[in-house]
Amino acid sequence: MSKLISGIMSYILPPSNDLFYSLFEEGTQYCKQAAELFNEILEYGINEERMARAKQYKHASSKNIKKTLEVLDTSFVTPIDREDIQNISALLNKITKKITKSCLNLKVYKLETFTENLKKQSQTLIAATGELELIFANFKKPTISDMTSKNLKMKEIESRGDEILLSATEALFSGKYDALNVIKLRDIHKDLENALDACYAVSDAVVSVVLKLS
Image (cartoon, rainbow, N blue to C red):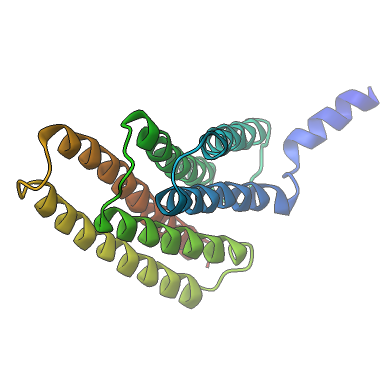
């Protein structure tokens, strides 16, 4: 009987206030590590150890969202709306998956030289994932002004990424590259842009949650 009561209470009572926030922060770390790894590959080249790390970050991110959803499924009360928890977790996982996919595709596509636009896009992702780290470090005790300010900064980063993508697209179709390389580079640029868009979507989602709680 005591075990039954304990099980019922664990379902009714909310999980530790830190649990979902800790899972968010963990997910953010995978985003940042993936972005740093992509930049590392551009700087130092592709090898098996870096490919192994890309797969490791991808799998770890998948485990993170799986654990988040499992906790969500067994929790009757949550610190923020259930839909927001699911959305934020899914977006963080998407960021890591898109970046690690790009890491692995650099090897699949046998690319050994990297354009300046690709390097600029990589640096933009590092800035965006670094900003995500700051956002979630303050998510437990946020203020509207702080989160709004961070969201505006993320928008600036995302807009910079749009400009880089436009420049990259113009260069790809300038006739400088052969058709096969155009396809390869365009695919990688697209995945990185999707990751950057997801960074802004996460930031937007956090601001929405903060406004609901205020």
